[in-house]
Length: 132
Image (cartoon, rainbow, N blue to C red; front, top):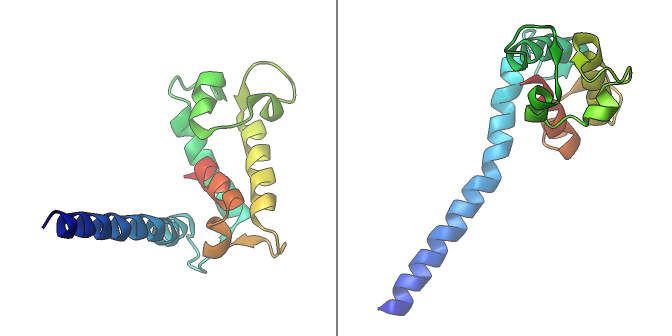
């Protein structure tokens, strides 16, 4: 009886793990739809920039038009690289530059769009974190 319970528990954990592994791909498809106003199943740089502008506003609760290190930490930005003028803040143009670099990294085929398979990569997930 105890062996049977352990086997059942183990099988349940394996099934739960498999479901968790499958979840990111499903979530990515839903994320693309939310970021894809032209419904072509991909996200272009201009669509990523538009979504990133909304994300920037959400990350800037004091509304000063810049992100300090604490505000930018939420999206795991390498703050020193994202702040080329070294003024201690990231403005909208600097944030847009970070998105552009992340977009290029997430678009290895260089077709100017990021699709579900590309969003599933580490570079795609980083881009998604910046724009959603």
